[in-house]
Image (cartoon, rainbow, N blue to C red):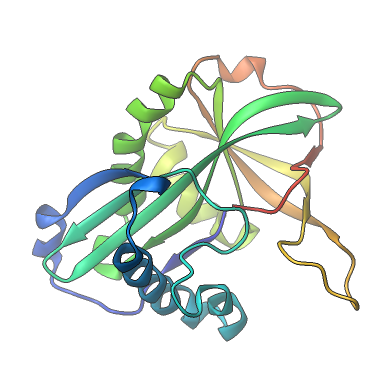
Length: 210
C-alpha cells in the first residue's frame, strides 16, 4: 500500500473545503492523469527520488493500475488520493478475493483526516463491489500512523508478523522478478467478519503492489 504525505503545507481551514470524488479508471482523461502524476511526484519525492520515478510523465500509478480511485480536490487541485483494485490473493494457502487499497497520498494540511475521510467515501463502493475484505500493506514505520487513523476508529484491523510476496512491475536483468517484505497488513472487513480472514503468515499477491 504505497503511502506518502506531500511536503506542501496549507492552512487548516482547507480541510473543510475538500470535495471527494469517486472515479473509475476509464473515466480519467489525460489531463487527470497528468495532474495526479504531478501530485504523486510531489508526495512521494520526499520519501526518496526512487519512489517518485514511476510517476514520470503522465503516469499516475506505480505498480498495478487501480480500477477505482477516491480523489480529494480543493482550490489548489488534488489534495488526497487512494486507489482500489479487486484481485485474488493467497493467504496461508487459501485464495481470497479482496479489494487492494494503495496509492495513498495526502497533503500535510489534511494529515490525520485524509485517510479516514477517504475511506468513508470509499466504503460504499466496497459494499457495492461485494468484496469480503479490503486489504493493504504498509511498512512498519507507519504502524503508529495507521493505528491512530484507522484501527482506533474501528475502520480496520492491523496485522503484524506477516510476509507479503509480490512481483515487480517490470522485469530487470539484475533483479529477482519477485520480492518478499515484512509488513503491517491492514484489513477492512466489508462483507465478512474479521474472524473469517484466513490464518497464515504469508500472503502472495501474484502480481505487483498497487
